[in-house]
Amino acid sequence: MKLAFVGKGGSGKTTMASLFARRAAGLGHAVMAIDADINQHLAAALGLDPDEAAIDPVLGERLGDVKEYLRGTNPLIPSAELMLKTTPPGPGSRLLTVGESNPVYDEVFRDVEGIRFAATGGFVDDDLGVACYHSKVGAVELMLNHMIDREDEFVVVDMVAGAEAFASGMFTRFDQTFLVCEPTLRSVGVYRQYAGYAADYDVDIAVIGNKIDDADDVDFLREHVGEALLGWCSRSRYIKAAERGRIGPIDELEEDNLAVLDAARERAVAAGKDWEKFTRQAHEFHRRAAESWGNDRAGIDLADQIVPDYILGEHLLRAQTV
Image 1 (cartoon, rainbow, N blue to C red):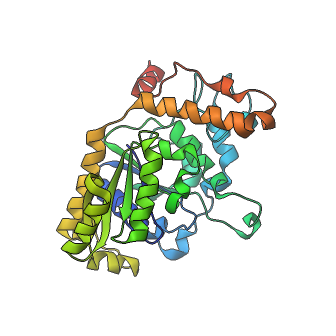
Image 2 (cartoon, helix red, strand yellow):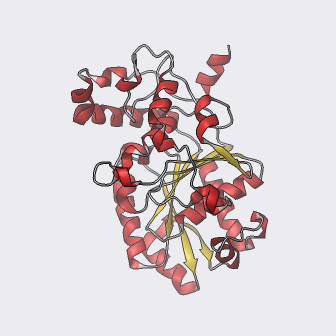
């Protein structure tokens, strides 16, 4: 399952993403976690030493390598230069799985307590004034487009804060989106923005309340997000200690807060995967990107890379092994 954690800056989405990933891994699930936020904190939240958290290399610096690997022998993509971040796979493309070994994973991912982790990398001085952050996450979008994951596996992506997460078609690459929401007007305002965008693209959003002190906080969230409220995390000594660098075993998290993580996992699994929708939306956003800027740069119609009946799903993996 591909899962996005989104929300207002400071809402606790990175903390919630790390707790979810650690809980799922602790229960024996295969887990991949990717930090796609401009503020790179997921590594430390997962338990990496702060000095190690500045990972090098990072995905944002390896877009060319990712393109070269994923295009494989697809005859519609004769060179990596003709791949956009939206380019969907077709016959001959390399498909990814969560647990495999490949040159891209081997270079940019590392193991953190059983979680396969990578970061896009944040802005550096050379980017200021000349680069858009969405160029950093292009490798992530391509990998999600080419990934065949199962319902008992979790790809957890900590997204950029606020409505910026909807600035590219990447927001449709997830089976479930969890919006972490504080009991404040600003935080529920971000939820309303997300809900408005998501409704047009059949994106399933579940709200996880955070920093809840009392019943009034819960009532506030229920009033503003309604049935989207999946559950809530109360103020936590465990989380406070973790934010100060003392990360204990995940099963030491308060029982009620563990239950929220389990409810989120169960919600995602129950919803299942819709490979036809995933593929359809990949094709839609690739056409948009091709028409708006890709074709002019490439000098050809990149929408011709779309193979309409090439629907992603586990059947493609089975076909490769025959």
